[in-house]
Amino acid sequence: MRTDSLRTVSWRTDSWRTERWLIGLGKAAAVAAILLWSLFPILFIAVSSLKPGQDIFAVPPKWIFTPTLKHYAELWRSWGVFFDALLNSLLITVGATLLAIVASTCAGYVYSRHSGRWFGASIAGLIIVRLIPPIVVTLPLFPIVNTLGLNDTHLVLILLYATFFVSLGTVLMRTFMDQIPRELDEAASIDGASRLTILRKVIVPLAMPGVLAVAVFVIVFSWNEFLFAFVFTATRAKTAPLVISEMIGSIDGVDWGILFAASTVQLVPVLLFVVFMNRYLVAGLTAGSTKG
Amino acid sequence: MQLRTTARLLPLLAPVHLLILSVIVLPSLYVVWLSLNMSSFGQAPSFVGLQNYVRVLADPAFHHALLNTVVLVVVAVHLELAIGLGMALLFASGLPFRRFLLVAVLAPYAVSEVTAVVMWRFLFDPDAGPITLALRALNLPTLDWSFEPSHAMTLIGLLTIWLHLPFTFVIVYAARLAIPAELYEAARIDGATRWQAFRRVTLPLLAPAMLIALLFRYIFAFRLFSEAWLLTKGGPARSTEVVAIYLYQEAFSFNAFGPAAATAWIMVVISLVLAGAYVVLLRRGGLTHAH
Image (cartoon, rainbow over all chains, first blue to last red):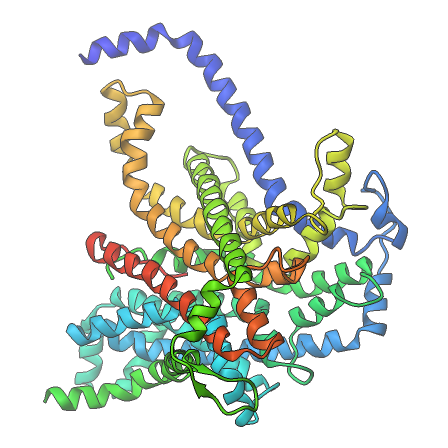
């Protein structure tokens, strides 16, 4: 049986060579298509933001031009609110990330070290509740937030963004902490360390990849989120995506140069972040793929 | 003893559960009550039973929004899975510069919906968009998304696939990497062709991960709001509304909190049915995944 198939293989060597060559060619084409699909839109706005006005609309598109920071200067002059919004986005992202990390780490630790019917049910509940569409909660929260005077504050977005990631955060932290031997907690506990000290000094340093994975998710989400910002903020706590959306819809027609500049400024920091943290993003996306 | 342990654990569990309860669970329950009442901003609610649900379910605008959403979910998500699967198999077959390519593929994950809309709006701009111009130069049909509802839906679909492909790809790719190479060797020794190996080894072993990715993407595509809102605001004449936009319009443009709340619960129920399927899979296959 085996020798038989080997003979067939050597018989086919010639056609195999052609086939391999064709496969190589197909792969190269596929890789080119993937790069074009993923990167072209991003590169396109970043490059266009540096083009002098008329070159943006040149037919065929101009790839060689004298770069200018004109649109960025114009953005600074006429859309100062965009830079305030960037600062708001930064504050809200940092706040939501810290809150989500602290909350998920504490809960993840409990879920990792204790099991039982109630723990299993409550973590399943956490995941399921997270699947409720965010727009559903805007409806009842809108009057509540208004009554509490929290409308248009950083706090309301921090709370919302953190909440929508603590379920995932808890599951991720539990998965990462499951890999830390319990003997370490026990040893520390015999040495007289309190639960919080164990968590801080022993578990968290070892679960750092989990903390970073959670951070990647919350940071990318909070920095980019549109719906909650759109519903719950108006002026003081407006975030960068919201201001960009106003630029898209501005009455004077769209000024593409300024829009490209603003989009680039909003995009580049988080893009660099994802590029450097891609290991944790992938780890976070796949870490869930263990026992529930 | 048991009670004391629970009491000691409570402070550690409290932050997560308080956030979830106060921001998601209680408001969602309040939505149930709201959906059974006729109310508007600054107006005392009056109990109307299931009237809001009847009104929403009979509203042609809702039917249209639901149809748009279902078409988007079905077409875009399956297309996305097919592309993600193809890409995962390509990556697994061995590529040079894999590290760099992986980062390139993940890049759209970092892009906000707003920025993605800026990109795709310009690329497909009916007058100056490079893709429109390229299509026209090749004598191919272009997308008239600002007038033609079906074209606008196509663009929304493209946008949402672009934004979420990294997620689908990573899930399928990770599952593909987990298949031991010995299985393929065994298949080859048994004389299986590439196609047979794919049908009999790859596909069945990837099925659980693909199902998980699908369910998550169904749930997330079903709530799609920003892409459609930023591209068309649901127009022209409510023709590109999706369910989330219908809800938003009812609540915040028409101040009809009751029908909006009824829509919200229709969304919740559909999402929970999908989530239920996920939990069943999770119990059976021991696979969990979170977005």
